[in-house]
Amino acid sequence: MTALPASAGKPVPPRPPRALRSLAAPTIFFLHRDMAQAQIEVALASPPLPRSDRPAARLLNQILGGDMSGLVFQQIREARGLAYSASGLLIAGARDIDGAALLGRLGTQADKSREALTLLLEILRAPDPGDDRIAAARVALTREMVATRIPPRRVPDWVQVWAERGETGDPRAWELATLQSLAAPQLQALQHHFTAPAIVSVLADRRRIDLAALRQLLQAELVELRASDIFPYAAPQTATPARDAGP
Image (cartoon, rainbow, N blue to C red; front, side, top):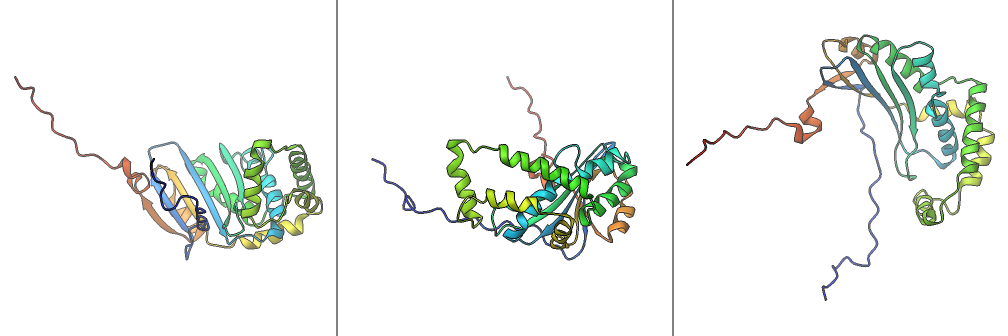
């Protein structure tokens, strides 16, 4: 019989906290590719959110990008036609020790990148959704939470997630009750967590996009990347000389 390893039966150590990249100044990471569109992503990092802010984070996430009625999509694509695709997302962190982040994504014409990115940053940093949009997002989120049923086989997974978050019980009733009282002031207060320098990634054709304008907009440093910096296996391979067929 094969002996069990020495670690058998011992708890697996917890994974380290998720910490997003911390930079001293706004930074644009640029990768050139021959393409018509520009794909842009913005990240505004935050330290771990306190438990009391989680319901507000969930509501703000619904407001920014819950569906095609999301604030980012409506303001950037539908109202102004500045992008083919536009979305916003708030990642609150799976555990109470994980960092949080506001994310924004754009798929736009290269020559509209500066205008679209300007508006995206304004929405992420100081959203003003209005009472009607907040109410609509609250209703949608409430319906989702009330209708969500945990499959019996997934109960242990949910319990583990709650335990890792520091919960002593099922937090859904508290989250639902807190959600009903949230309004614009609580959402605006949440924004103060996301004050780190912006991290922007840009995939575009350097001949079509005005990188200098983007740098000026953000007062940012520019880091140019190659595909091999991101995907090591994409590095050019040295061709092996063909061998002559022998007898």
